[in-house]
Image 1 (tube, rainbow, N blue to C red):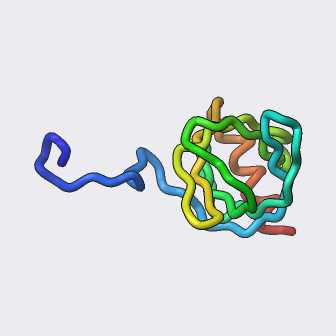
Image 2 (cartoon, rainbow, N blue to C red; image 1 turned 30 degrees about the vertical axis):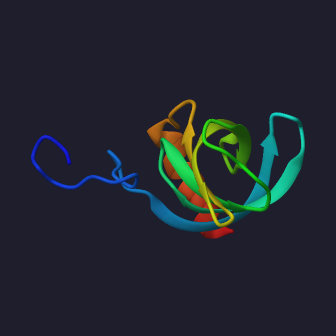
Amino acid sequence: MNSAGLRTSIDDRSEPRIDVIHRTRLACTDGVERLATVVNVSARGLMVRVDGEYGEGDRVQITLPRVGKVAAEVRWSLGGRIGCRLERMIGMSDYHQLLQAIRRA
C-alpha cells in the first residue's frame, strides 16, 4: 500500500509504456547475443520477450532504432519476458524518433 492507502504493484510506473513490436538483439554481459522482441517501451524502460535465463539485477544491452545500444538492468523476469530499467533515460526527442522508426518498420 502507498501513503494514500492504494494498492501498489511492480507495474506502477511514473510514465506509461507504449505497446510496440520491434525485433532486435539483446546482449548479455558475457557477450552472448540473442534475438529479442521489444513489446513495450518508455523513455526509462522496456519489456522484452527473449529466450534464456535472466535474474533481477542482470545487465543487458538492447539495440534500438535511432538510439543504438542502450544499457539496462533487469528488474524482473517471468515466462520468457523481462522488464528492464534503462541505465540512462532516453531524451524526449530521441524517444519520439525511436517510436516513429518502430512504427514505420
